[in-house]
Length: 330
Ligand code: SF4
Ligand code: MG
Image (cartoon, rainbow, N blue to C red; front, side, top):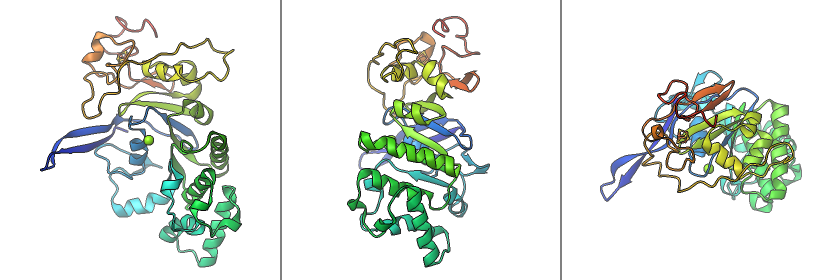
């Protein structure tokens, strides 16, 4: 909770620090055991940074990250090394995340070398078992990544992530680089593994249709902050934040007979620079429902219905705005 990630910006020959890019600013949420939390938003909104911060692949400026009750945001190297096996990451581009000079067996076995003392034979057994789990033919163990298709390479990445029996996996756009025909296979594999192994996922994606399929709850990020977080059904059927409404208006409705047709909302302007976010609500420069208060007061992230959180003055309970100007659309 209260996760903050600031990246210093350097400028000029002296590389003086001229400001901080707030990649992730005060983002708070928890992930329940065994669930899939979808994290959506446009590219650059901070969702990948957030996922990496949770796994401590980046240093965290401020905030608390607890996995299984253990605080990891400030854990030292050794403590982190001990926790590492329980949390893993599946990357977007299997091509880039697999060492082309290593065989499949050595890629999958690498975490076992680092964190276990298995004998050669035990290690090979475990590698075979992992290959079975992700649907890779054992006969391919000595081949190299380039000999595989994109979907198979992602299976290798998933097998490696599973090697140490993790509890929690951050999937960062795990299917974005794959052919559409392969995407569903990989998503189905992730779901199957979740059920079989009791995994918890943070599923980062810009694809709201895919997230609708896989996530139990969905969090929407904009410019490094949480805009909305809700159970899947509530978010897709009754989005509250104007940004979520706009995102969803661009998603084809899977069952057009059930819901009234949504009108496509086109947002004006560009996403502002995270180095210089707008004052007040960070969405105020593009929001179709912007009000005066939005330019000066930052809305807090509040629970407005059971499990449904939103950061927007249209729904704030205790702001100057409450009951007055807002709520007309609520
Ligand atoms: Fe729009 Fe204001 Fe809500 Fe921000 S707080 S999303 S600008 S209505
Ligand atoms: Mg990303």
